[in-house]
Image 1 (cartoon, one colour):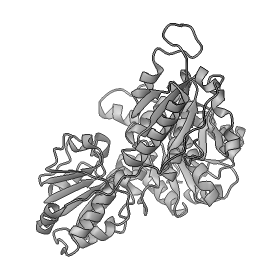
Image 2 (image 1 turned 90 degrees about the horizontal axis):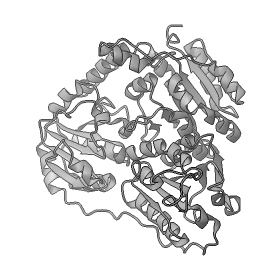
Image 3 (image 1 turned 30 degrees about the vertical axis):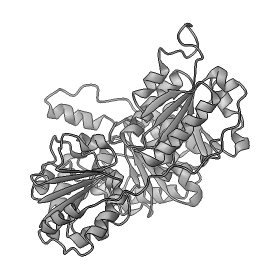
Image 4 (image 1 turned 90 degrees about the vertical axis):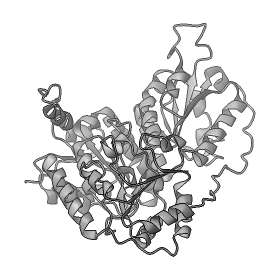
Length: 516
């Protein structure tokens, strides 16, 4: 059934409780990627989904397997990633106690980190739940779903899955944007804020015609491109960005929650009318209290606004110098806050092939890079922004590389020394798969961001230093390549070689690299 529905890859770990789900995988023409931990399997499914736009599918066992994948499910929920987790479950968890992998309420536990979690009482229900999940991925906000199937049902005979009808599609909305077009015609300084839900092509031409300035959220980086003269970049978390927002006379936010992790302040800073466009009604009713709220797909909105403003004259209130000056100032601030990272980012970007898809972890290197590393296309830098989990980068990059490698598309991971150790065992999976995956490891020997935060809060730094292994030796023990370049030039040579290798390459970088 999964194969007939377009699934090509499953990530997971077999166990005695879910082994029946593995019957017939190869015969169906499906590829299974063996993770070393269910957390890794979940992040791989996440990375695969982000790379392809198709649902990432993961198989896990009852109890601990489901618990282990709940962190990736929470991350996928936060970042609107389509993930289908299928687990086994006990036949009777009510009257019996002391069973293998028993939980009090496995279904309810999973429900806390996904859109819904349901148990299939029979085969037909299992098929129906899978189709429901796939339809909802295509028509609603794409967040993870969990289906659990009792062990006895997995072991029983079952009827064939029903034929798939035409997949559900989201129909274009008929939007009347006459009022908004009139507001734009009167605006001197219109400002757009584009989030991860607004990755459709065409924004740049619209902004040029309107004379509008733009901010991209972290998830929206690359939608407009770095050479757009009125692009303030992914710098909304900079406190002074509130002054830029306050100077606009119309603000239009599309496909973004304007969440804490988008702003790192309570208020956006606008004094002008705010227009919100999103497919999630909950977003439209948040604390920002938009003056005009449109429940619509970003692509439908873009096309409708393009038609409604076809004869518009560009606003003249913004200047390119404003954006250039602000971005230069914020780049200098970022360099001063976390010294030595900006030059390494610049050198790494210069040797990274065009079209590389990057998966980063919660690390100071990524925090700086997300501000100063301009993207020329959307959907090519993935970061665990909302849930903020450690250990994301390596397995997510493996999932992305599984989807991209056959087509010759490059993929790269960026992790910190502490977060990398959450999922470093997935190096084994990357080696087995023969993925040419550069893994940039920023090793400052500490929880640097937490140490800085403690100092800023006048707390004596505690529990921020950990003994690290010899990462290069460890990587080689898994069968990967490894290097610790001493200069930026040597780093660039190593990175280029890693993209052409027949296996992953761990590249350990340290804070002293830029000065070497």
